Image (cartoon, rainbow, N blue to C red):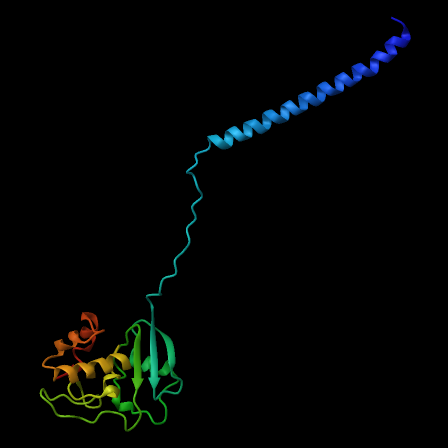
Amino acid sequence: MSPSETEQRLPARRRLGLGAVVVVALAALAVTVGIGILRGQGAPADVVAVTSTPVATPNAAELYVHVSGAVREPGLYVVPAGSRLVDAVAAAGGFAKDAARDAVNLARTVSDGEQIAVPRKGEETAPAAGPGGGTGPGGGKVNLNTADEAALDTLPRIGPAIAQRIIQWREDNGRFTSVEDLLAVPGIGEKMLASLRDLVTV
């Protein structure tokens, strides 16, 4: 073979060698991708990441009370569990100048979700004689058969809506014959009755 023929064949061999290297590199890449796909298919399909999200729950050490009527700053307040009515009134800025202070029992405990309506002077229910000797809130128990909405509204957990239902029940069915009759009023259940039992009479 002449030197000129040898020189012509060398570039061709170089091209063949370079092509072989490219083919090998592509084959290696294909094998790597194939292994990755197989591993992905082999993983359990039902394995998912589970994270726990805390659920907000009411704080058992706090009570929400709505203080209205003759207080300086009526509104919704959060007070510690075990608070008494005096604490709720204090949270609302204290009594207004025209508050009928003797018409509310500052020593009683308050309950979560309760509306506390402090009457103004002249709004408190005057003592009313009735079967069982019940009187208005200034003199003792609230008489279910004679109390108006303002007097009923001073009771724990009794707001204007339920006070109206009590009066409506009385108008539709006649006098309450026992405190237990409150269970017939829409919106009053055993738990509410238990909180009212010692505060009302017939």
